Image 1: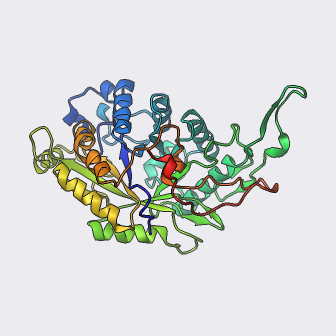
Image 2: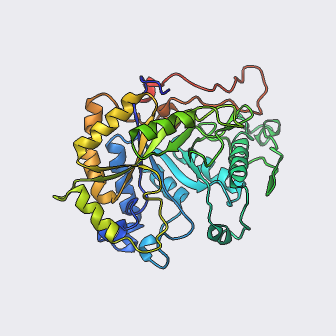
Image 3: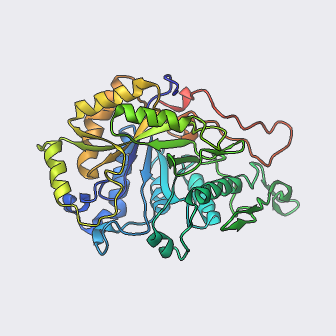
Length: 397
């Protein structure tokens, strides 16, 4: 059950032209414009100014449409790191697969993102299931993807803790930059990889980045350690989404606890530019290339209609107590985001359901999640790994 005193979370995916596989041609932009830095920076700044809690950057090694220049994208961590210097409050959550990439590199890249973003980094950890993706990484397909994803997230979290918070001492007198006693080997040995550690960069400002994952892709916890902070759920209607949220935050078989928060993935097509959402969606569906690789229509809740109706839907989800927030997946970003920023988010703030994140707050503070103690720091006063935290009202303005 979500704490009703915590403002409703509104995330937004800002990948490419939009979540619909036919979004790119609908924008009328060239492939270079779609992946260009100016457009990316404008979109994320607009989302931040509208009060969006966090932005996700979807990613995939294989193009959505084979051979289409409109499917080109830069990798998600690079995009998130770029906009980290042009924003001050919005959380930045790139998608990095929890299967096939090297866990050590994943940990280092995401720790660096959190440092650059001043503690606003997150990780959208998703399982990649196709043999073609494994081949693109130069790996054999993994039979047990659930086990692989669990091991990867566990070792990445171990690596983030391999430097204690005060490991960097910068002792000029002795010529020491770090205290070696505060660096730790993780010594992880799994079925498909092993990692010695420690990491090559200090512990992230948040201690652990906020980990988001589609429900079912990554085990929510292992032993006493949480693996997933925010579970992304879907559903055919509000009742199904609420049930999925309750399931995601409840203890799962083989896990000690569920995710701390559940957020509903919500595909959005809005009335815009004098056209109805129904007409826009029909045109997009008709223009979808055959064989497109896409997550659109793969289980997320969907809303198609006017801004007032979406505001009402979000208000019902916020009042349910089962759902901490939503991640909006706009069909065409350049068309739907202006309506969200102008009509939907202001209505939610006026109803005191949402609040803009405060500049300088970490993503954990904004979401009301505790900063984890370091698992390797056994000194008195190091603290314990608190599972839940009271809402950080001061972190949200």
